[in-house]
Length: 153
Ligand code: HEC
Image 1 (spheres, rainbow, N blue to C red):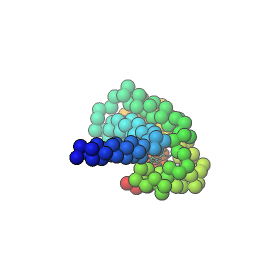
Image 2 (spheres, helix red, strand yellow):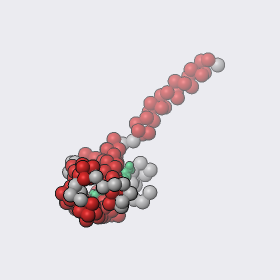
Image 3 (tube, helix red, strand yellow):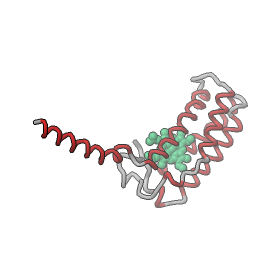
Image 4 (spheres, rainbow, N blue to C red):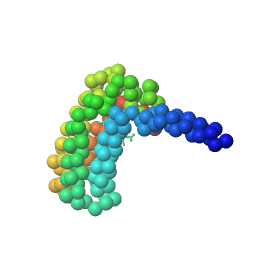
């Protein structure tokens, strides 16, 4: 019994070792999803203030908006390798094949986000009205790209 158990254990360990890279996910996919999570974290603070759910704080708003501006300019070239669309890697990504099929169309949406976050970074720390006036443009940039290039959940 002991030897059979030992064999099963060895086999299990080996199969886990082989399975691990798959379970851990494609690093490029993880990287771009993590970048999106950073967008979300920062815009959530600004959205909370714009909606009056959290008190307006000029410093916090300015930091979050500047983070968004910086994040929007991160070079994502290596995060979107061919073959990482949701047809090929279903369940691991929501990136639609259109990103690659209609490239460089997606770049327009990335550029729109840069412009919108620049405007927000210039306004967010001024006062609540300025923040409210500029946040819609950023939300529209996020949503515009998702509509064209991200599969629904
Ligand atoms: C240029 C296109 C584009 C822009 C601009 C964009 N996104 Fe995305 N976003 C995507 C795509 C494509 C995915 C799917 C990525 C994947 O699953 O591999 C995604 C996924 C996400 C996700 C899910 C990430 C995860 O963990 O799976 C969040 C959250 C998100 N975006 C938030 C945002 C926010 C907030 C903004 C604006 C500040 C934004 N995105 C701007 C294209 C974009």
